[in-house]
Image (cartoon, rainbow, N blue to C red; front, side):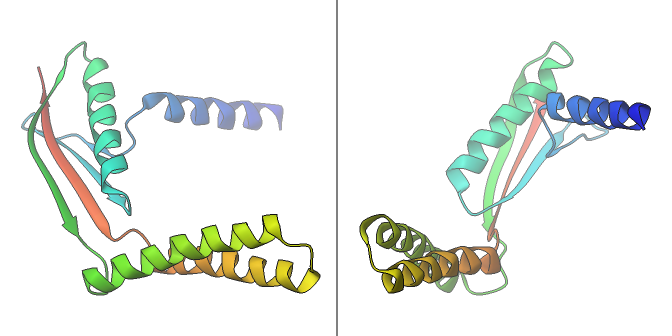
Length: 137
């Protein structure tokens, strides 16, 4: 049992230290980072960081060839963005009620609104895909 736990812990550490879980190496030296996201700016920063980490493994630097963002959700983009905005507001609003109310009924309403925002956020998923192609030099 101890050996199994030690092996699992070692694999977890190796995976977490890699620092580039979304990098897809290419045979021709052109590598890709593909990240599904609901926050394009965060995904862009993550893609750059992962590319740099990948190339550092070879004592090289990442040079980016292309950078694309596309909507990949199952509903139209405007509806998706509206839903994400409502979800964010519901989470904030729900948390605000919980923090500012004394009545048991208001607290239950706050929890419902806050959890509804989380449920909506999960249902909408990650509607964008960020992809960067790069080479290590």
